[in-house]
Length: 187
Image (cartoon, rainbow, N blue to C red; front, side, top):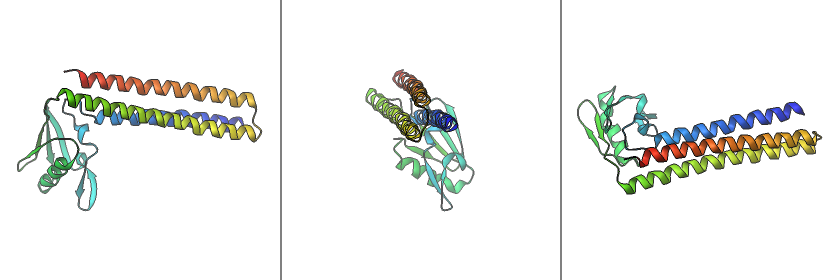
């Protein structure tokens, strides 16, 4: 029984860590006024019938803080990438030439900053929900072990550890949100 409890504890900590990592990745995708190749991570281009990330078919660079330069390895992909960017929710207008695409990142308005903070808050909240869901699942599994004959003290200790993991990971998510909020709101 003790091995099963240890398994659930390590699984809980690992899963909660993955949830925090996911929030971190999603926060990186939220544009904070500076050009970043990560802004394009969610975009997929039809590359010979396969949805492919832009970064896998082009070189993405930041010549300055307000622009991105996308140079596809195949010239015929320029129009395809530009179309995907134009149709995305990034709100960017691609400027194409024969070699590549330039994206000029406009300075953010106060309203846009508030929208991005709301988006970051939603990501943080969904991360917290995932962490709490993991806690709920592990606690249910521990209670099942209790019914199957596990020692009550061991299960109570395990539940306390799961709560500590939960609290620590929620603090991590909050820190990610506070950092992103200050990054967005700094003019």
